[in-house]
Image (tube, rainbow, N blue to C red):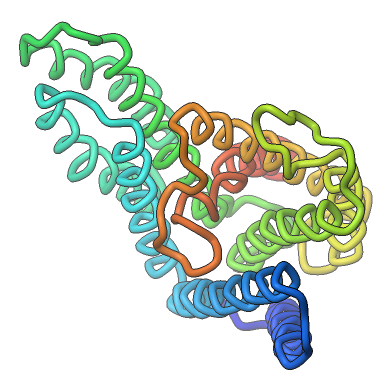
Length: 315
């Protein structure tokens, strides 16, 4: 990855935002607050510590180039799939199928990414794995809830592995005119917009939110939070067009696709958690819950951004 001036500006902006937010959190923690206010501030500071940790890990991965990014997202997919399967338990007869899912399918999907074999990367899980893993489960001879068990494994692989792998797949987009050798910057831009949208939707929802989008699924997701977060993120993303191969209007359009698909993904994953009767997928990240809680929107936004960019901006 080339550490050019534009990338350094992006990194500097993110670090400045984190430092400002941390200072605000520290200042609020020094004030006398009600019990509910103290709880909110403690949650904010816990989230900030989580963001510092995640930013540091992502930064190290980006600094090592393609290899580090692929390994980071491979590990992320592995941990996310573990959370998904833990929360949606399968049957004893599926253990060998799950062994293949974790220790062959997941690393092989990222191997295809590493060697830039796009043709097989795009169909390996949705075609070949989709057909072969149920055969392995059926061979175990346990038919009770077979369709439900198979669907859980298929869904977990599609969301946690296939969809997530489209984020580092941005590094495969080598045919963008005038953008050679800068794909690391485009990956940074995508992840930043995706996560910034989550943060801004949360902030607008907490301060202005009154009308839930889907109250039985996620009461905290409001129309005010969605509209305010999307508009603010799109404005920021379009203002950062200079770091991308897009013009301002194209950057704005892609940011709309990222934010709306990410919001929909978060809503879908909230519905699954609601069905399972839990608040978070896990406790791996302080203040954020599990790995899947942090990347739920990214899982849905990554394929959208990757394929729109590949279709419209590569030659």
